[in-house]
Image (tube, rainbow, N blue to C red):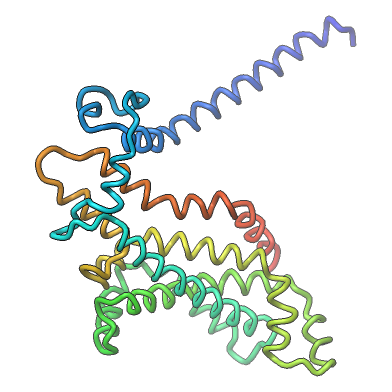
Length: 293
């Protein structure tokens, strides 16, 4: 093949790559446009927002909207900003993630390495819990929390998220532990190791990818949850998503778009940081447990 014959093929390949890149850039721009609007609007004074466009770059850069959203914005009758509700979400998400991940790890360990009669039935029932919609458990859960004295409290909401999250974390760990050879457990038993010694010394050190998956999944689901938060907490015990909704809906007079956008950014930054720091481990952990099970 001569150099002249290769030229049209090279041009077609170059045009094809250019089309693919242009399409990807256009799709990325469309996907990121809402984020751009949120960031730029939160950095503008209100007069500039009403006098210009949402998309334009800030002409008078200011962080006043972020300061008001964090510590001064009115949420109902209290003008405390998002700060106390941000703390509430941390108090909810940290123990809920730790407990649901830990219980899911033990469940997956038992269902794969210490199988018992009816193990598949138990796993099937737990798996069924993954498909229950939130709305189906609101009334039973509210009744349960009332009976045990945790209604409208942060510990009650932690219990809700742990109970609902165990189904997912058990699924993650069970599918991951199936890929680990049973010879590890058998060899440890021969050496005299017991249930928890095998779990802590052998199983968990090899499970870092799926632990990261479980933590990211649970953190995202719990932090972004609104329905459980508005249903099972109230007032000063509410998570940040409920407070964000109240900031947006209780505004009187002119709409404070910059404060609303700043509040939305504050509420979304934690999950964004989690995915930036550990996002690659999320995909790696999911694919590690996708071969068997």
